[in-house]
Every structure is written in structure tokens, then in C-alpha cells.
Length: 314
Ligand code: SF4
Ligand code: SF4
Image (tube, rainbow, N blue to C red; front, side, top):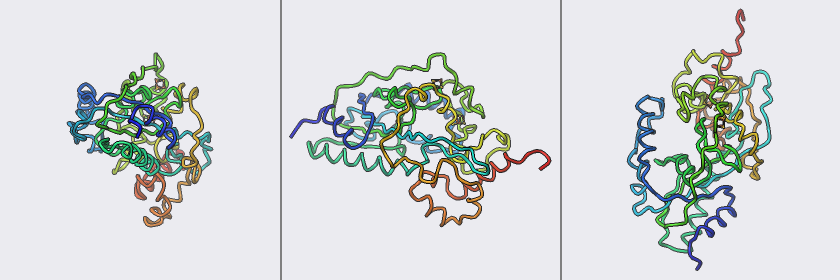
């Protein structure tokens, strides 16, 4: 049986369809959790109460996996070369939601990777997450060298730009470690200037209360009236701060995965949500990230965009 090395993991991860793999020592994230606590104190998490939980585990992954030695960060490129058509009476979908839900694909890929590695050595333990879990996935991605956290908060890879999904695997084995990625935003402030709701309050500090992505997806309440006229037609999510990023213009590469090709286009008609029952919505978007907002949320978003479209005296 071969020993589990960086090369063994990288080869298998690439074979399974991951595009980026990096290794970081499972050190405590004391400074990062302090920053998170400041962000929480300023109520930047809005309604995402889960961000306030498990801060001890976010800081110390050995509270998740006793004996943790390393964190492996894995990325999947989802960029597809389509554009929004800005058709009348439609709303734009964030690029990550054009295809099928990435969680299903990445969970499957992670499980196959874990099973393979355990078949080589049954003492190899892991705890893996895709979004859902008390891990600071972007911090680990940066430490593992996948990319740096840009001023818009996203991880930017020099191979794919920021159009990547990230999975995090905590393990009890030691590896050779990557150097952390180096911040290459430089003097650029394009994302901060382009954000229509001033949600990027300072470098890497996003106020979810003002972010269209939060307001149209995680938000369970109404969208504040102060944002009428500022949504730029976004119905689910928002890509403005990524679309303007010069690194995305330079590094975006088409994904090889059909999974991320637009299932219903990059926009949806605003009227469709009024007509859909909850059950029809759930069936129609069963495989899509859009289900996260639920039928009620999408009706709200569509109604909000219609208010944006009303011209004075109409
Ligand atoms: S996703 Fe949109 S609203 Fe949120 S920070 Fe980026 S540009 Fe601003
Ligand atoms: S737009 Fe500029 S400042 Fe913003 S993340 Fe990209 S490089 Fe960094």
C-alpha cells in the first residue's frame, strides 16, 4: 500500500475533478477569530446567526477532529463563459447558481477522496466541509496557498480567479505545507467602488446588511426600501464585485464540468415566482442553489425588482 503523501492526495483529487489543492498546518486561528468577533460585534452578519456559533471550533480545528494536524483546502472552478442578457422583465442570477447545486457534487467528490485515502491507511481520519460547518474555509484556502482573500472577501486564485468553490478537509496526518497565498490586490479598489449598496465597508469587511447576495438569499425578512434602485437587476445573489475584478478578467477559465452550465439561463422571468406554488418551486429548483432562498424569498426578490423597474408617474 502506498503511503499517504501530498502527491497521492493531489493526484487523486485532480482525478476526481478538484482543480486546486493545498495543505496548511492545523494551527490555531487566533487573529482571524478576533477579526471575526469584531465583525460580529458590529452586527455585520445580519440575520446569519450561525456565524456567532462555534467560535471555539472555528479557532481550533482540533475541537472538531481531535489530533488534527493539517487542513487540506480543495477548490473547484465553476466559471462558464456565458453572460447575462439583461432581458426585460427578468432578474439576474449569480453565476454560481446557473447550474446544479455544487454541494452535491463536492460532497460526492470529497467522499470518494476520503474513502480512497482510508483504503490506503485506515488510521487516516478526516472531517470535511463544503460551506456548512464551523470552519473558516477562506482563511484555510489562503493559508493553503489556493488564493488570497481579495478586498471583496472572495478567494482569488491565480489559476481561475474567484470563480471557485471551496471544500475544507481536516486530517490527523502531517504533510508538506504550501506557503500562504500573497495578497495581490495592490492599490486596486474596483470592487469597493463598484458595489452599488456600499456593502464593502473597508478592505475585506463586508456588511451583510447591505450586500445584495445576503439580502436576496439568506435574508428571511423584507429588503429595506433604501435599496430600491440599487439592485441593478439582481434577483438571486450578486456578482458585481467579482465581475469588475481585474484578476477575474485575466484568470477566469472555462470549467470542464457540465454540472455548472446554465440549467435555465442566467436570468429568470420575474413573473414566474408569483405563479409558482411552493411545491412547484421545490420541484423545479430541487437541484439548484436557488432553492436556498425558498419560494417565499424569490417572490420577495422578484417583487422588489419590480419596484425598481417602476418609473416615476407609472
Ligand atoms: S456581492 Fe454585490 S452587494 Fe455584495 S459586496 Fe459584492 S458588489 Fe456589493
Ligand atoms: S477588484 Fe481589485 S481590490 Fe477588489 S478583489 Fe479584485 S483586485 Fe482586489
